[in-house]
Image 1 (cartoon, helix red, strand yellow):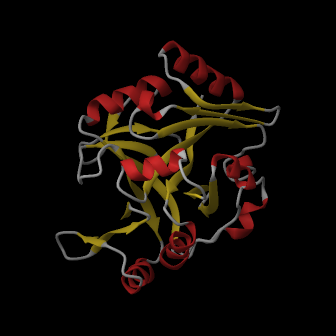
Image 2 (image 1 turned 120 degrees about the vertical axis):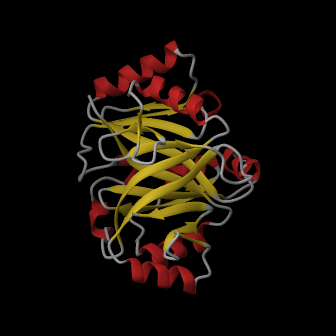
Amino acid sequence: MSIRLRQICLVAEKLAPVIADFKAVLGLEVCFKDPEVAVFGLENSLMPVGDNFIEVVAPTKDNTAAGRYLKRRKGDGGYMVICQCDSHATQLARKARAATLSVRLVLDHETPAFHAMQLHPADTGGAFFEIDWDAKGEPTGTWSPAGGAKWTAARRLEVVTAYRAVELQAADPRALAERWSTIAEIALRKDAQGRLAMPLENAEVRFVGLSDDRGEGLAGIDIAVADRDRLVAAATARGCRVGRNEHGQVDQVELCGTRFYLV
């Protein structure tokens, strides 16, 4: 049984300028806009990152869950960690596990081809934790939330090629890590820097202490870079906030209120 990180969802006050940043800085292209998110008062865009996706959603009306989340976390930022199971049995086992832990479901949508299970962030902590199954969802193939299999035409690898980790920050990162580990039934480990992490098939979920005043939430993404010079130049030109290492080199850029660590 395996679980992979397939989609990271961010939330923004306004969609268009954020998508423009992702295109310019990370060299990404939009592969799909889901009309069905309108029922939640949202608009969205998905962009392939290697074999996986970054999604950005934005409210289109007042009093939406996403809008309340924006206020709670003081602006644009991380929203959802969306994973893909290798089989329906694996996904159903995680659904049963969530029930035994009294973790509520925000969304439980099942068809013969796709099953989406979104867990309540008040019960998971950190972010929305979604565990899905796609009958045709091979790692490099069909993914229903991206509209099927046509997304590969929009894949661009010139600047970035994959993401390696998603970072959740919390006042008590160990408690948050243990909660996610218990739900997913995946043992925790420590990364090379001694930080707690939950390994997935293709990436990891990392748990760290608070590093800003925005509280608990999805705060960072490790992204594999193919053309660092181009990325940094574009980020600088667009006025993006950047961070530097001890050698003065840019090692992170901020997009949609999220730290992208360049690896």
